[in-house]
Image (cartoon, rainbow over all chains, first blue to last red; front, side, top):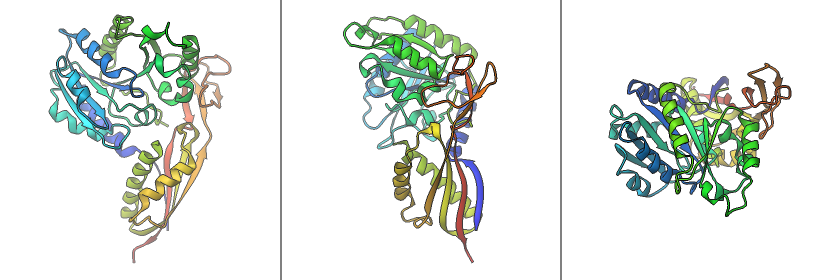
Length: 227
Length: 116
């Protein structure tokens, strides 16, 4: 017997993500999925961003890592609350892990939910968590060939943060080449140069985030799997 | 590496369909994999071998049909074939597109034996 189906393979995850998005909308919360490779500076950027949004706007955080609670420990002082998910051998977060974390977070009091995904440039882009926007980080030490190597995640990004730009004079990194590679994938994506060390670009990034808080609550982030 | 996550998602769908259709043994699973998803067939087959173990699909084969990419420019509506790294419309020279084909991973069909 042959059964013809034609269903998206990740539809179970997508259905849970849709419910998460409804919860965020009802809580008037902007959910932001942060994606990058390990060591690009996600946690430091989050620390600085959460502080910059205070005292007017409060942030709650979900952190995904294979192991340890180090990132959660670092973020705890300024965030409203933090839940650390240890994914074990899984290289990305699933929507149901976000749902389970919500019981430990005060979503109604927060203005933002930051989801720090597991450091990985491939799988996190494929799994909808219910977020409203996707932020992709690329740090200068990673090299200027990474957009061409991992194009898919950049195609789905709402903003690309080029991080650790304080190292631009030290390392050989062709920033124009990177911007051109990004523009071939996504003409509309915002590109901001930031340094968590010297503060460069932070006000531009935080203003962008605040503008998204106004316009994107409840919206579905761009997904590569929407076909 | 993402092939394993996809294989796990695939098997959830397969078992669901098998149960609804009263299949006791699965012989073949057919999926469509969009070119833009960068699924490596050999890696996908290895992941499939791992997830089919000790299940009603333990003897099943996996057929992967690759789907060529097709996008449509949001500005001039021209349809064209993008590459992994280049979504620029040949007319407008902007990458502002809707992907019509090539981003999908779809379970197409399952062949199996019914329970008596």
